[in-house]
Amino acid sequence: MTDSPLPTRTLGAGGPAVGALGLGCMGMSWAYDSARRDDDASVGVVHRALELGVTFLDTSDVYGPFDNEALVGRALAGRRDEAVLATTGGLVADLTGERPSISRDGRPEHLRAALDASLQRLGTDHVDLYYLHRIDPDVGVEASWGALAEAVLAGKTRAIGLSEASVDELDRAQAIHPVTAVQSELSLWTRDALTGVVPWCAAHGAAFVPFAPLGRGFLTGTLTRATFEATDFRAANPRFEREALEANLAIVDRVRTVAARLGAAPGQVALAWTLAQGEHVVPIPGTKRTTYLEENAGAARLELSAADLAELDELPAAVGSRY
Image (cartoon, rainbow, N blue to C red; front, side, top):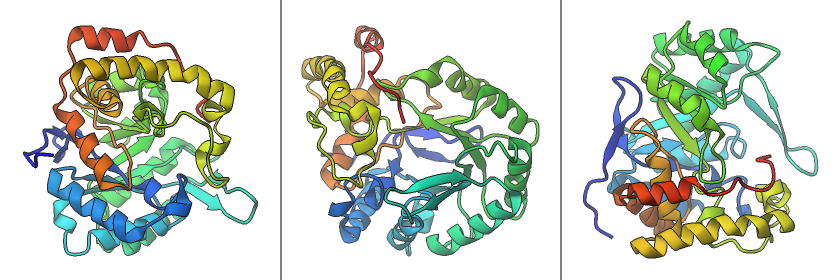
């Protein structure tokens, strides 16, 4: 594909310019198809992303846990200034059971220690964006957000954001310190955020960062059977159970129809629809393969007509809950 510059968007009011599409790094080392993990190949994907203008990289301390940040840090060695780097804190993984379990820890002391540890693994003295991964109901958004605001003053992160927050929680955080970005799931089969959070971000100068904009790979049209290894997150996800998946294939069939008309891949159509939800929207599709990275980047140049968007807006809701 051409290496012409990727269109850019601003990461929050007055924030840095980033490629219109970012790169979610989680799947390189955790949650999806981990038996095929290849760190050397993933480093190559990050390097290719930077060449293409996919400069916004997303990781977290819980991915692995910890392995993904170390991988991203390795990939950015000597190239830190080429990337806009985001990581998160506030979730803790327990790997002692048969399946990993995750709990919330939004205590200020935990977040301070977590950010320091993340910086060490990433090999940098600051990140560009630090998210509270989930709000801890036992702590409250105000206490956690105050700790993140202190990290901005300390120069350890340039901006802060929230993941999966409600409009009320965003208002409460905004009263303490500006919310630069909100990360939540948004795709053609998960559209809940469009009714409240996406408009809130537009009104408050915050970026909205959709994770899983390809429906955890489903909207690419390449997953037609619910066959995943036991450690793959999707093996226990309700939307990938056999009956739900078969019902949800109707969504993919409609996306394929639009894609065929435009001479594009289904995943590109899905990403283009997500981008069309606002200039403040910066999706972070994940991949560990250069071919898919390049295909995804092409979505930033795909123009959907009003008729295309209307057809996609009319897609049925997905069968099965998100988690």
